[in-house]
Length: 178
Ligand code: IMP
Ligand code: MG
Image (cartoon, rainbow, N blue to C red; front, side, top):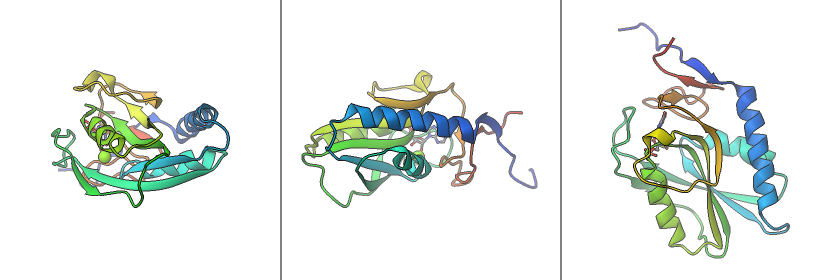
């Protein structure tokens, strides 16, 4: 057993993440009619840093809300069962909603979220994910805004955890390599 937790090896630097988020923010701003507010629904806990950087890069009116889900089990793989732990504070009817999520892996979490949020009659519903691991997909899920497409590695940092640790890393790293 190691005395301290291993240091993850670098996959995406802070500068790479910031530059890509600036691109996504420009894309999002341009995709909605001027004057129509965008409502960002961030999925806790993993998306909190992505949301923070994304909203600061969006130069128009946005509102935010938070939802927490848990995917039963705290290892490196989600079990596929999703449970809502915290619901939104306000309704979505008639609003332009963007789900803000850290990573899409099997797609089970996002397909569950899209289904329950679509049932609340938003004017539009899109999804922004910082990371996507397409090789792991079990269900097809539409994600309009993807930061980075990555290989099947378990990544941590920049909000993403392993057993609740590593969320505070300013970069995205890979555990157990290098
Ligand atoms: P999915 O339901 O399999 O798409 O998994 C989505 C959730 O699993 C994410 O919100 C993460 O919490 C977690 N997850 C999937 N892959 C990783 C990873 O590489 N690092 C950290 N968390 C991950
Ligand atoms: Mg998560």
